[in-house]
Amino acid sequence: MQLVVGRIGRPHGVRGEVTVEVRTDEPERRFAVGASIATDPAGSGPLVVAGRRWHKGILLVMFEGVTDRDVAEDLRGTMLVIDSAEVEPTGDPDEFHDHQLIGLAVETVAGEPVGEVEDVLHHGQDLLVVRREGQDEALIPFVKALVPEVDLAGGRLVVDPPEGLL
Image 1 (spheres, one colour):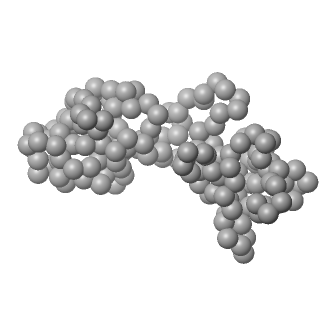
Image 2: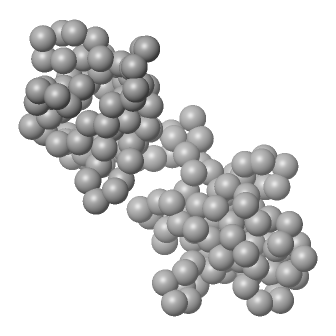
Image 3: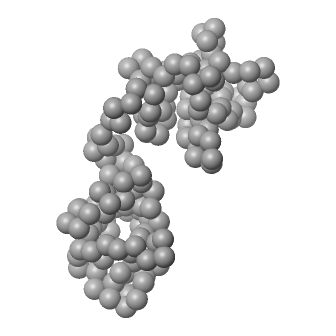
């Protein structure tokens, strides 16, 4: 499974530098000089980081072979991706990466099926987006009180929703 770590934005200057919308907790590691990053669409890459710097809170990246504004403009909108196998476990049994949760079956503590985790939103509080058959999707806050069990090996997570949440 591919995970997006960034999206190439507009060119910065005339020498091929581009802005990157960072979508990883590890930008220093993912965009290290010399790192080769796969792309979506795949035909645009892989791209090798030749240089990187922060400017007013925005990551600016130079890629090998991208030496002018026109080539940089052609990359605009390209997604920078890694394989989920490259993501190391956190070591914390109560911390999970989004890709580990997406696709898990959701059931209540009573064993009733609810649906499947479709996405994880990060808006101040982490929310699980659960797709339900024949119903609107449910948003469940990803907190221990409401999600007491995450069983990655079993492909499921258990929810203990208050009345009215589902």
